[in-house]
Image 1 (cartoon, rainbow, N blue to C red):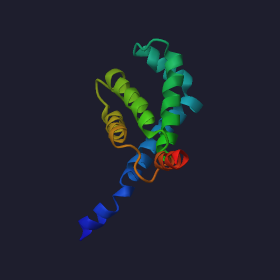
Image 2 (image 1 turned 45 degrees about the vertical axis):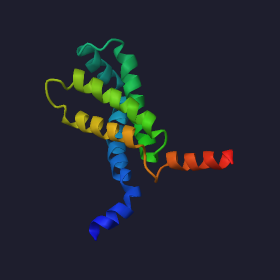
Image 3 (image 1 turned 180 degrees about the horizontal axis):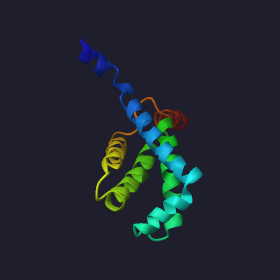
Image 4 (image 1 turned 60 degrees about the horizontal axis):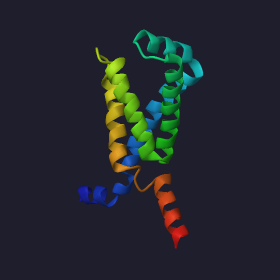
Length: 136
């Protein structure tokens, strides 16, 4: 009985994932953009990332903006693709020696949304409906 309820209501399935990832990425992006660009750039420089300040800004924008878009379910697959790239680079550079677990969870969640999309309860879905109505 319980399983039937979950199967019938699976339109809600991506919402907890989107919210959790959004909180993670918005928090990390905001800390870079609004309180630590110099520190992030210094860290990037220390681990050998070229154009450290430029990439600190890019990563901050991708994390903060991508998190907001995931929360809204808007341009979800594009955001998830960019966030996946950021997480892969983070794992291979900053976290390779250890402490990669949070970045790995961010990568796993982003890849799941890349393949699944935002789900029925999202602005992506509303935009699809709107585009279909516009064509008719």
